[in-house]
Picture 1 (cartoon, helix red, strand yellow):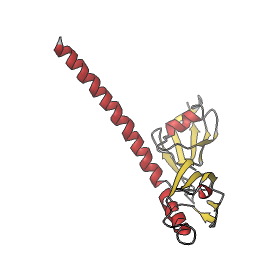
Picture 2: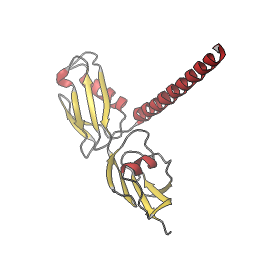
Picture 3: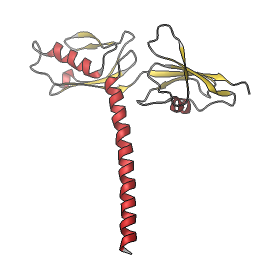
Length: 187
């Protein structure tokens, strides 16, 4: 009897460890993606300056130029910066004349939308989530229509000035600002 209990306990602990590893590897991947994420127009950020509530902003939406207005510094351009780079820029702007060694934190609250068109039930713009795949984007758009092709899908990447469609499949990673096209199948 003790052998069966030990074996069952060991199997249970193995299962718990597996779930734990899967959860934290997904979390770490999302964290890595968000730390490399480049800010652009439409993103909503939070700025915290430790001990300075007047300089901390709960929700700031970047304008069409990827900029925002900030106390003492005026218009701050954040376009194509990571959150860490923006933190450094704000810290440098506040240090000296305004604060001594300011502790600045920037986090992304909402990413700009991605867009999905073609043979989905509800085409349009949807909020991006870190780590998103085309499969998840299709699910957000209500799924594929009966006429949708499972093979003819493409993505126009945000920032591609030539707007070239790139062939995609359900496991393709989606980024904020991407445009997804689901073509019609013939049969």
